[in-house]
Image (cartoon, rainbow, N blue to C red):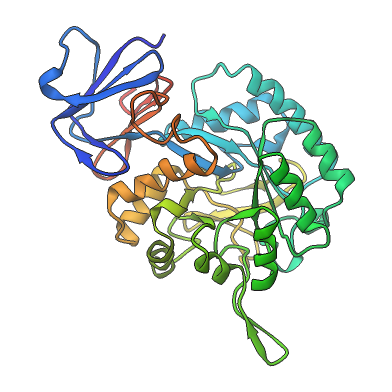
Length: 397
């Protein structure tokens, strides 16, 4: 376990530059150093990058499942298997994400997750902590969130949820709902990321939310309000709020379906790679050949179909999560949004790490960081995934 490993014959990507004629040395589950090939130690084990790229492991801060499982299925296997499945595509860390559903089931899931996270012994991506998406959402911006479970925030409810685990790292809500600002205060007081999501807020309501701890926007343009009229007067929405304030971070589903190239380019131009996190928002069909399934609960969740590389509601009125993997996100930004490869990688490594307060540990190949590494070819197909210094996936195996 955690023996030294040299990764050779690759171009090393840092958040700032691309290094050739260098190799990466891992030791004891951490990055030891990046050094010139003249210092290569012939006695140490090596992994050949085959002329590809060596980058920090990809971090997905918003996904609901994969490999045929949804985190909400309520079993230990349904927490572990998506982490195993997504590791095949370069994800080395992820935040299991819930959705609007029955509160009792949510409480059961949190307790289950506590147990699994306390004994993480499987060959897959790290579990970073819980991301709760909903159920405090605007009906007008619900997307594929089940309308049966939407509600307004009540302190007795969300405080009970928060008391169940110290592993909750993020909660998404529509802050314009009654009690939404108080929820933001409660999250900020606990150091939990509060994110505006499935929200029909006006610009003014979003600005008020910023003052109550909401600092992030969930999947921008997907369930977020834009310019509308109130009476005869135009008013801006969440999208415009996100663009105007530099300290507000955003995430985007860069699967090539949820957002067209024009919007990908616009978001990149305005926010820049240091304020954008790429997310999959993946559901259970990610990494599989499923054509039909359910989003959320395997028995009671909404039925969805898989076509055109994305999940949709059966009436095709809305997307229902994605089947994307993190390497696809990077490929989309490079090929469709004309983003330089190092900056596309930054948006799925350094930026999400910093957003969750993990910079210094993850998202970089700097000495002392966790030895989470991904090796991929020129077409961003994953060759090797390394978690804590251990190879958990190799394309040739």
